[in-house]
Every structure is written in structure tokens, then in C-alpha cells.
Image (cartoon, rainbow, N blue to C red; front, side):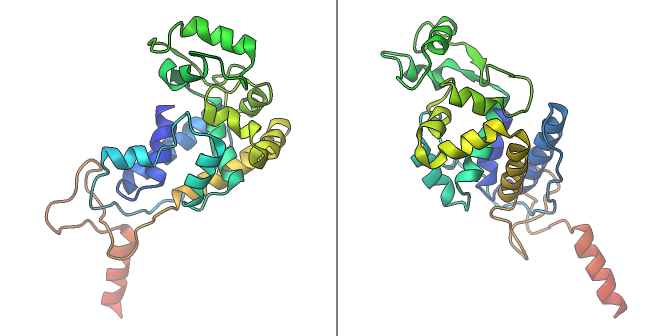
Length: 239
């Protein structure tokens, strides 16, 4: 869950380009190891010249209590459509969550869109609203990247409001159903959405820098040159 949220944030900011690529590649590797699709992550991004603030982080991460309309509107500003949103949400087929992210659906009254047996089981894990415990995001196959997350939603067993409302909302319900019955389709659309995210806010030309260290800016105006830039310089010297 941590990695997924990091990628969601980094995908819509331009400040951590190199770290963004590292996380995208790491996530792609983890995806393959856990049964998910194999795909190549586009490389070559430049790094930003500033670090994101806490407010920027929160502004770019749709909260677990957001409904589908809110998420669709938010990610539409990044060029992501409804199919992208539903596919990327499928990343919740792996991971865990703290009680605080979903107990608003249990207390003081149960969310009517949540299966009663599922809710009762969650109450055993989180007996109070502020109880400090964790549970899996996908009850059917928590350690495998597959399409069972969408089966959960069709059975009203989505953990977050942001999950379950994808099936409740008419704009996304059909997409959820199509992924639930066709894992290959889900994998294909997930890869398309991940690559689309990796190409958001790409810095070009003299924008940004190529950092010597991912965690800090280069000192002064001394920037590293990429292999491509070095090649171009060498070529221009021969002309």
C-alpha cells in the first residue's frame, strides 16, 4: 500500500523524477513476482528543482473515503480516464490498510453498501473506530496480483469507500465487471494506465536537472550530463 500511494503521488508531481522512475521500476518488478503483468517502464526523466510539500502530497492523493465521482474528477485533470482509474485501483489487490482508513464505514453505523458478514469480520479486527490494527485490502487473494479485487467489489467487499464506490457508481460499474470476468483485460488496461502515469509532467530541455543523488539537489548549477547529452556533444565535435 505504501508503494502504491508513493507512486500515485509521484506520478502527479514533477519534483521526484528519478525517485519516481525507481519506484515505477520497483513496482513493475514486484508486480511480476506476485503474478501480475510484465511491462517495460519508460526511462529518461529529469529531476525537479524542488521538493514537494506535505500539502502537495495530500492534494495529489485521493483519500480512501473519497467517492468515485471525486476520484474521476481529480484524476481527469491528470489526463486519466475512467478505465485508467478503475485499472489503477486494482493495485489494491495487494497490500494492507490501517483501521483508520475504513472504520468510518463501520462506526457509528455500518455503510449499507458493505456486505454484513464482511463488516462483522472487520469489526473483529477493528473493534473501535480508532483501533490500531491492519487488515488486507483483498480478502480473496491478498498476496497475488490478480483480478479478485474486482470480484470483491461485486460482492460488496471493497475495503475503502473509494474502492466500493467504483462498483456502486454507474460510470465505473461496467468497467469493474469487465475486469472481474476478464483478468487479461485488466492486466492490459493496468499496464496502459501505469505507463500513462509514468509520462505525466515530464521535464524536457533545460528544465530540472539530473541529480547525482536522488535525495538532494545538485549544488549550484553543476548538472550531470546524460549519456545521450554526452553523445550529442561528442558528435557535434566531429561535425
